[in-house]
Length: 133
Image (cartoon, rainbow, N blue to C red):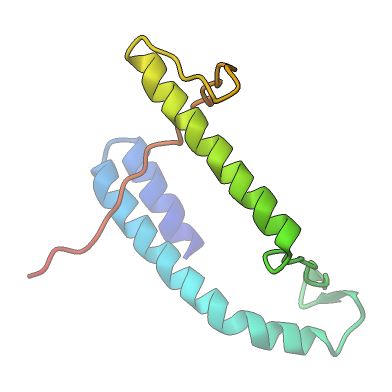
């Protein structure tokens, strides 16, 4: 599989195959790999329980790490109020940006000019699907 990936990569870079074909095939390989990992991870973790936290096996070094702890505050009244206030501030800021784009500004009930948000753009993506045949 590693060889197949490297071959696709190099052929695309060297112009021997379309980068679109290489991209589509690599995405397909990734989907299969992700599915395989999803299936194998639980049984690999179960097998790792038989060893110390750090161990070597068949030329590989493994380290078992505990999952992270997360907290959910959504049931707290104080959190809900603060979250609603945040949403309101975000919406006002978006409206301020729209007003600014047309040469205006947005002022709140206290006469304070509302600042627009900083705008960031994510990287473009390329979606690939098999054509129906």
